[in-house]
Length: 436
Length: 85
Image (cartoon, rainbow over all chains, first blue to last red; front, side):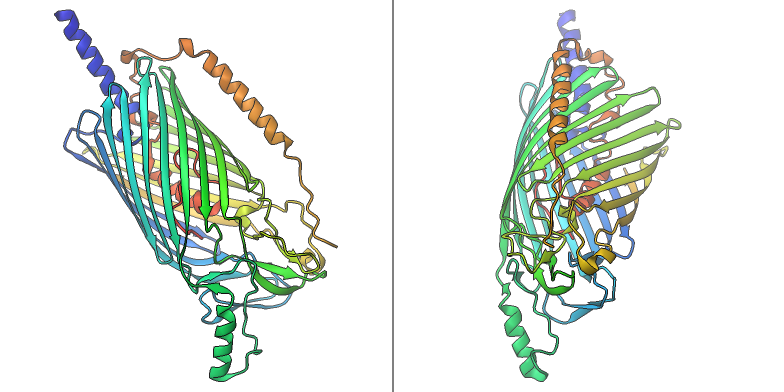
């Protein structure tokens, strides 16, 4: 009798402590039952001379006991500023039509063409429910919706996880489906069509405007388009010893549909590197990605190290390596600092071209989006966190992020030899968070 | 003067994958002695030892990197999500 009672207590204790370890929302700080745990943050992201972003997050988690946990999250962000179009800079001024077809913008000689019309607000809502279904087995159900002016994304996910070997091993299998609908300003440009720019060739007055509009509409498709993404995720978490655990994930993701960025352009240049016309990019309509992700956490007496590595490859020929490391060092019972370092490296997509040459036949697919080109990126940051006497916690995080696009072996012909086709992007990140 | 694309060798990637899987297999081979008893979870049970500690920070970072880089996901579902520029 006594033995079975103590055994039951041991099992209960094991269940309680293990709950904290499981990946997923139940790893959030658990307070007493029926209490909501709120994690909030506001983040500023600013690039030098380019995009700036302000993003707010409210995440609310409620533990209903018996490993049943609800997490809901609201994210609102607002984006303003200029984004690289993909067109190359030239030793002379260049004029582009705005994506909507209303008006133009001009870039100075030797200046990278940036479209400064971006202004968007996004609202995202997500919810996740964790439910035990059988001994040591839980199911997570998730749903999310994200809305911005020209974009709607809805998705759902389901995953099951099961503990083995005294809860030292946890296996997870999950599937998610995401449906995105895109309705770009001014319609979707036809892939590799020539941007229509009013340089006086349409004549003056109302008739000229009508002629421009008619020519502009020839390059556009006005109804919305969509893409579907299915992800499969296999995960294994293993406790190594009292101080260390590791996670290993394999994920497969397949997207199909409209995968272009409707605002990205390509320069079509002559043999002397001089722009003859501007084309709209065209990407394949499907993409399959594989990734392997390994993470380990190690508890020192006064610190926790968190190191992860991700290898990803896809049928666009982009291969990437990411190393991310954090060291949380406890200064006292209530204060900590956490340095962060991240290194990222990717190879270019097989259809990436910094520009097209007009003596060559047009390829089926081409994009000059630097995010599909070869690049490296580093992030260095520092976070300071403080737990107050009432149990509330605040933190402030400052990070520097720099992307260095590289020339993946393309020749800089003619006047392009004197242009910076691969400029670095430098961004500063500041975040304040509060949990209660 | 065509655009000449000099493909750099991607063999090193294959080598890295092989090394990664060998290391993983070696680690799994030692699984028999891995793990702890329930009463040895004092350190593992700490909030900061959760694999997704700082979940809000992770979510914000993943949004930034999703928008700025050619690869996303790995830690969890890559999904779709935004027309981020």
